[in-house]
Amino acid sequence: MSVTITRNPENGGNLFFTSGQISFSQLRRHFADDQPGFGNQISASQLRRNTNVTVENPIVPDATHNEQISTGNNLSLSQFRNSVKRYLATQSGTDDNSSYSGEPGFRMGLYDPNGRGLDFAGGGVNGRDGQGGNDTGNHTKNVQKGVLITGTCGSVQLGVAAAQLSPRVTVHNFRIDVSGSILGYGGAGGTVEGGNGEDGSIALSLGSTGYNNRVRVGSGARIYGGGGGGEKGRKGANGSNGTCFNYFYYGRGSGCEWCGSCNGGDDRIGGCNGVRGCACFIWCRRTQLANASCRGRNQSNKAGGEGGIGGNGTRGRGYNNQSAGLGGAGGANGQSGNCNGFDGTISRPGDGQRGENGGNGGDWGQNGGETSASGRAGYGGAAIAASAGASRYSLYGTRNSSTIRGSINGTN
Picture 1 (cartoon, rainbow, N blue to C red):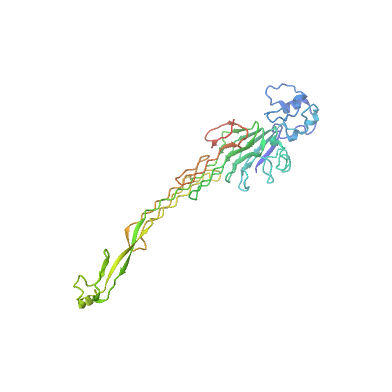
Picture 2: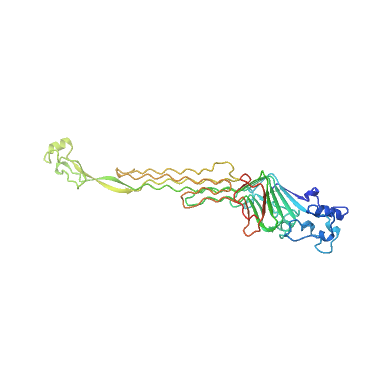
């Protein structure tokens, strides 16, 4: 995970007042200079730590580094030692989930044992911003938390987002600024008759959002939900049934004593009858026509040729399929109808029909292609979404088909 945490980015990444004297003028400059219309003076009452999570830009925010600052009347300047105004996390390089089962490509939630997550407090997995920190860290507080996504975040797993804020705790005052790429998983195409294509995944999942969370889209950003997989094509229809036959023989005689008498419709094979009569013993033996037989036909119905297998659906566009073609695979040809193994044909069995082509893979954030089979294509993943029931978030910046592909859910 390529992420850097900066505390007080306006102060060179340094905590306030690590040493030396603390003055009201310095406090005003550090904590109130970004407040619109704020005067040159600041009072002690204005410097109390504000724990109200609905406040977008508190003068002195609630943060793990600020918990020694009073919320009441017992305020002192020494309480501002090692304090913060805001945090900044910067993602760079490539973050995906190829080595982390069930995890997003870029984790912005609580810090985990794999070293993934945003540890603003700096206490590790058992610290305040860690998964073992009892969910009381900076994610849930009103301190502003900026996240700059400058690299690439991707998912190679079904149903898992390319970048995710926090599904476990409700977060406040996150400002996510995207200038890089967040690319969802492209769903696989259907390969089983009646089965479905896979769904594409969400690109940016905000999880459980609370107050004052926002996303800014840079002009060069790519926030693309994964495309759904195409449905498998339907099997071709079988050919019509036909009628085949085999010959059978009966009544073979010996000499001129049996000239042959066949059942109606059967053929007489050999014999003297109709040549010179059965009395012509010498002639029959000389010409070897004395022994007669009858030939009949046994008819059998035979199924037509098997229909061809439908073509597989194609994987949708995604981080795991950024350039391959999206066209569905062709269906197989049906088998020819025939009377192989029989002596002849009364009515030829029909040929099986060609299988249907597989459905196309969906482009970024789009559904996969449907076929006439009994399943469905995969659904395209959203570009940006929050968890069901979460508060809404604000979306700013450059919003067009180059920067966002896929649906946008839950915005203000």
